[in-house]
Length: 360
Image 1 (cartoon, one colour):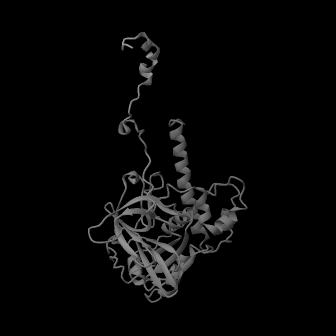
Image 2 (cartoon, one colour):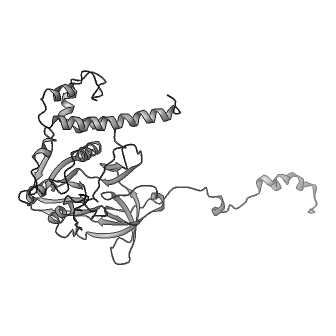
Image 3 (cartoon, helix red, strand yellow):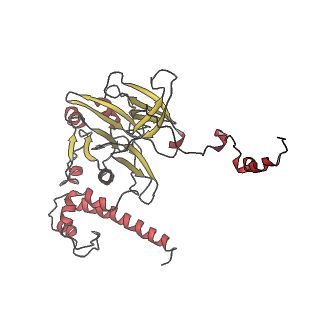
């Protein structure tokens, strides 16, 4: 049979282009994906401090081989704030040797976040520390003078974050703190005071065992001195109060976690830079009254929708203070509460005006 035989016409389908087999290029035809490696070998580490894009983390905490490691964050975390107290997942060289660098590839779920803003109208918040369960507020009885309204702000921020507050008063050899402490009568607040310029370190230390405690306070109140006394190898810088302005000089420039080792066990001390203001622009307004626990109990008798401001009709808190039912600290506490509420009321009005285009 000739190769030109007409019988080949019956097999024309064999040469149909749809039947042509093309070998795919696995590189060019593979769909793009945003999936990242699972990093099953990642370890959990505690973030101890942050310095110019480098993170000091603790690996194998409380286990043989515990060590500190230097790490950088992965690119996908560049927009996520990573702060002292975070529990991070790390990969890479976690030996902790000189010149080694690990990589942070994720953050574990946080149990708490302590935040502050530049002022009460600023919606941009700054995360100070993660996973703390206590806040130790340090104030001085004198030099510099105590600021009860700043302490009120600390208490509001602590409650908003779900953190238990404690209060330490230093320098009681310079002044009697009784009037200052009267401001906090009625609060469920554990207070430690120094005696003859000597702090009750054993009592304070006992309160730190088993907890992660963030230390906050105005510059110059002795916070770093207290940290050094509790954690001898902390070596936190200490300063003095300016005799002209009466203000403390900032000494601690970064937030760091330090392990406290006490007779009853261990804990974590988180030292923060001293601040002269503490904005609450991020705080839920409903949590402000809750921070004043004694006033909140009285407020249960207020009319529905009571603002608790000076012009609020039939406000049970105002009536209780005027009747002397809340003790000598009642008027000052009510004034502090009303100042905070007025600030947030003004902020709500401004926000409403902006949403409506600024029309009256």
